Structure formats: C-alpha cells, structure tokens
Image 1 (cartoon, rainbow, N blue to C red):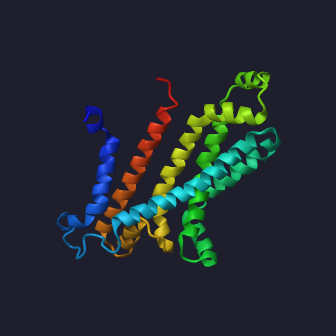
Image 2: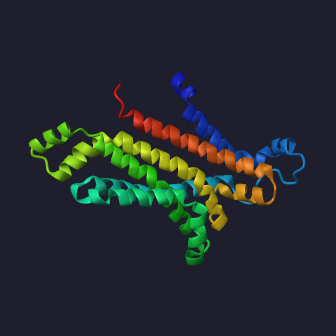
Image 3: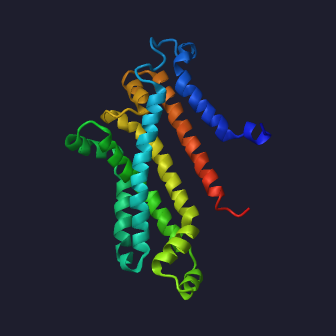
Length: 243
C-alpha cells in the first residue's frame, strides 16, 4: 500500500465514520466514563448505520432536486429572454434560505403529515441559493471573446451553452453545489422533528432528555459526513484545476 493511501485523510475519515456507525454500541464503557450520571449513555433505539444511510439518502434527494432547479434557474436568467427575471429569481432563492427550515416544516406538516416530504421541501428551499449564485457567477465569468469565437465557428446557442459555457463555468457551479450539500447535511438533522429517521434522531432525543452523550454521538457522525463530502467535492474540483 502506497504512503499516499496510508496518509489519505479521506480514507481515515471514511474508516472512522464506518467504525462509529457500526461500533457505537461497543463504546458504552467510554460514554459511561465520560457521562457517569447517565443511565443510558449510548443511543440504541435505532442502528446508527441505518440512521446514517437515511440521512445521506435524504440529503441526496433534496440536493438532486435543488441542483436541477438551481442550475436550471441560473442558466435561464443568463439567457437573453430570461435576464429580466434575474432579480426576481435571486430574491426568491434568498428568501428561501433566510426562511428558517423549522418554519417550513411547521407549515408543511399539517398538509403532508409527519414524513420525509416536508423535510425535503425545507432542504430544497434552503439549498437553492448557493447553487443559483454559483451557476450565474460561473456562466458570467466566461469571456465575451470566447463566446464570439464560438458564434463565429457556427455553433448554435445550445452548443455554446453545453460545450463552452457550462464546461468553463463548471468549477464555480460545483463550488455552489458543494456549499449547498454541506449546508443540507447539517440541516437534515431537523428532519427527525417530523418523524424522519436521520442522524438528528439521537440529537433531538438527547436535547429533550438532557442526554449530552446522545447529542455528541449524532453530532459527531453528522460532522464526519460533512467533512467527507467536502473532501469528495475537493477531489472533484481538482480535475478542473491546471496541473
């Protein structure tokens, strides 16, 4: 095994995440020592592995929807026919992020009931802003001279968008998606307040029962997911950087 693989922080972060996901029940002694006043120092109501998978799945679904809407809106307002709607779109997505996700859940739950659906709506609204901003900024960084050259070469508007603008704007767009996903990993914990199974479950139960150990266990796993996701996006972005 090469030295690079052995010292790879992504590998060690993944191993630590997997170790905690499957080995948390075996750390009862450690948490009992850290929190001697607690009768149940380790969260055992659900498997941490299942909670982590449900958390990731919720983030993937909401992020995929946000990417489709956000990138589509960003492209739309940079086209000649859509420029007049730019300020409106930017205002709407800004409001979506400033509106607390808990408030979205409070409005959606009476209509949809306790399920993952209200949480997905809240996460999509909360994750749109960085994606829309990244798409607009990335496309606007493509120089006019490049666009004129592409037009002079006989390329259609669609070809210019897909073969010139989007490839050149990709690093900035990916950076926006990266920010959105990291935000949603942390925010997805609140989905447990409306009946969804996520890594927020031990955090919510810990808060309601004054169990600091539960809170720590859920928070550490959420933090590791965010760190690993950030590292993966960094590897993705390295492909677009000159070597």
